[in-house]
Length: 198
Image 1 (spheres, rainbow, N blue to C red):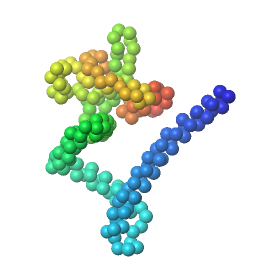
Image 2: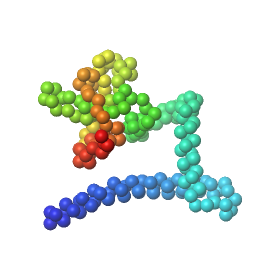
Image 3: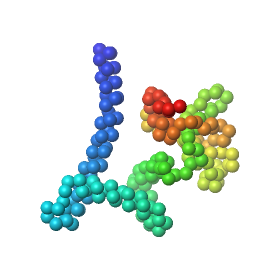
Image 4: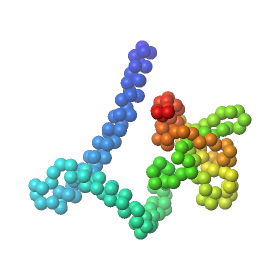
């Protein structure tokens, strides 16, 4: 019975990430086709609409937004609009958490380290994997500002949270891991292993 359960669990763990990824892609495609497709049907003459135009329009919109965000005036207007979310009680907490997460993994966000770091805990020799979130003293609150300190995020396994800690620079050691590999490795408690080619 244990062997059957273990085999079933192995199959589930193998299939579930694939199914969730495919479902997310499916949901995005269906949403773009449904929302933008309806708008395009109303604009085009009868019979000129073809399936897939909504998806194409969605991809074009996303690309154009990316281009527009390079303009200072657009970024300023976006920041003004975004400020409205920060003043709404419940939406504020949800939106801020999502924004911080996507800013952290955004390729346009400049970080002091391109790799993650290992944090040494006391004199025990124990180390944990972390991500530098702030290394510029001027961007930290005055009460914790220190030229020799940096902020490091220590994620907990299986996506149940984490800690942001203020550490001396001497307590961290850069690791030869990409952000994606380190995030996957820490969130699964190392079960996935390291996929580094080195």
